[in-house]
Image (cartoon, rainbow, N blue to C red; front, side, top):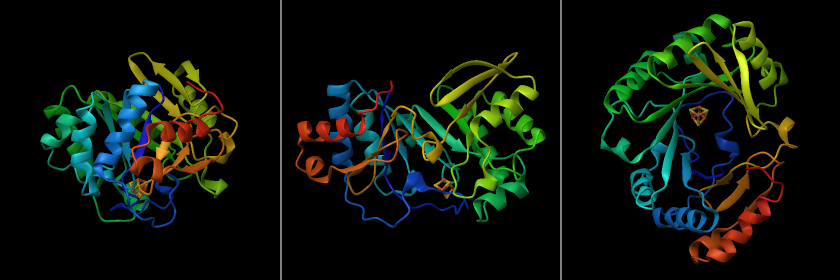
Length: 285
Ligand code: SF4
């Protein structure tokens, strides 16, 4: 199913060297209010049947409107996923009660490599213990652990195995993602990651245009194609991202953006749907 992916802030407390901030490279103005996000979520739920949405960034927990946006969207009966580095989830609060799923960027099980990736002083062990703590307190929360594969840095089979075992231990989904970067020497394509996992005994059990599903006995992993990798421009359009300034763009299908700020602010549902349809003109699910 498609969904809206709200980039509610372009800012982050990490400085990952490969960060694409969901494709936002400039410091853009922040215009959208919690009611604006509620309006978009309601229109796409009522008119397109989109029953989930994702809050991303940057680090969405930095946003001062994060909590209010979650409350408003949850009240529409829409399941929320939050993409986070987990550093601000250190004390799980009632906030997580409004969330159906968290996607946590882990990227390695090696503290040294983690530091090299995030470029700030926040220990990996804190992130891992936070995730364990969250699992204990929120047994029904879906947890996906994201591992962006960087050639020559975190792509050892030993690190892969430790990550897969940690994910299994806390009943999380392990997702390997290929890196989107202009530096080709750092990139391992999704299919190469699949081949490496097959070398560890995994078998491909299914796939769609955007990801592969693999398993090994009771362990399951996914390999996900990064929507911002220019190599995947011919894939069907998937989701619609919303920047904080009301610009919408699509994942996959080649970069295309439209400005819907006027339609959002004037509560013009028909106009908003027309803008979304401009982005969705290349098929998909
Ligand atoms: S945690 Fe995510 S948003 Fe933050 S710098 Fe790293 S990749 Fe970018």
